[in-house]
Length: 337
Ligand code: LMR
Image (tube, rainbow, N blue to C red; front, top):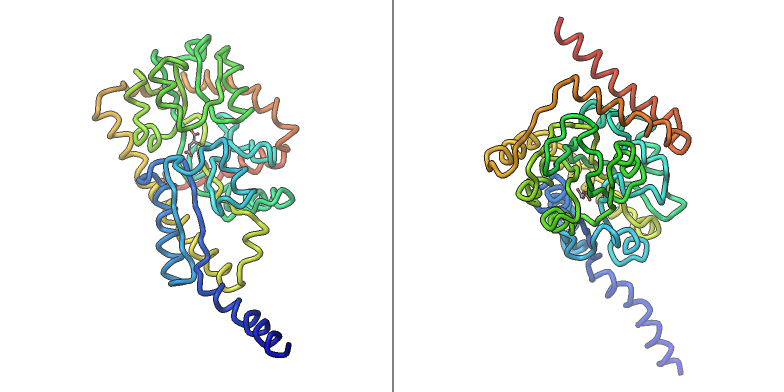
């Protein structure tokens, strides 16, 4: 009997040692191409995390909706089938309506303003706004400002009337096209190319890196330089899983993530112009600049969307976003002196 007890005790003592010899496997799933800011940030996280914890942590990155598409990835995260995802900020409204601020058309003047808002108190608070749903925001990751594309030139808002546009699963984006008299359709990212090619939709909106790497410009005749909104991400993890990690690993992974996000953000800032140029050079779609007068018409046409969503988002959040633009304006003015 005593021998048996000893044997059981030995098993109990040995079990944690055996278990800790297995690396912690972290699945990081996303929907875009590897060379994009998000794709590169995910690979950088793998590199840094595995370097910090050799043999203790293994990161498996799944790009291009290989593991989960955007319709399923959040559910998979909450079920523990994947540990890190980075959905666009447009895909969180089920979890917190405040993040809809990022979809308001013509709210942010440029990516620098988005960056300042995200770094400020309102932006930082939003990272924790879904903790009651089991989601922890590890940081914001940039992609870029969106361009409108279609099979006919869109100079004025009336040109979009009656057209079908693919949108992400966002009620704000739905309202943005409805207010133009257009017909928005929520379609998963992995299906966009085919939807454009087969004529299921006539147009869409996306930043340059996605338009280029997913070849949307091959199946769109015109891309309008509208910069009318932003497509950025929140890197999120399953909060109970994150909190269950050994403290040193959690700390180290947090640091690796911050560095990986900085790496991705630098790519987003540095390479957007390059992707735009590649689309122009390929000559498959015509890139149309938009005049300030034209943009003002679009801004005016889409303005009702702000009023529609203000109660859900909160005026304080919208004002903080506007303030991030003001600082741009002030900085620009002082630079020109
Ligand atoms: C989209 O669905 O258009 C984007 O959210 C894809 C992405 O992750 O950039």
